Image (cartoon, rainbow, N blue to C red; front, side, top):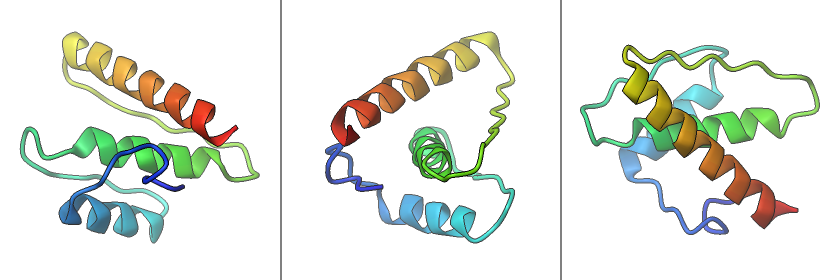
Length: 86
């Protein structure tokens, strides 16, 4: 996936996390609040969904408010990615 097309620059620690996720079947990203975990998760999910085989991704959130926020961010980024890559 081309992050430049989506006008999003991942920070170095986000790029390292995304690379590490690419090298493993499962994983978790542990970063402080505001560190960009959601962007890493979104880019990893977009990469996984671009594969030929069916994919299932589970995102767990401890609070309903956080789950709602993640839902909006994921859907917004997926729609943007689909519009820019079609």
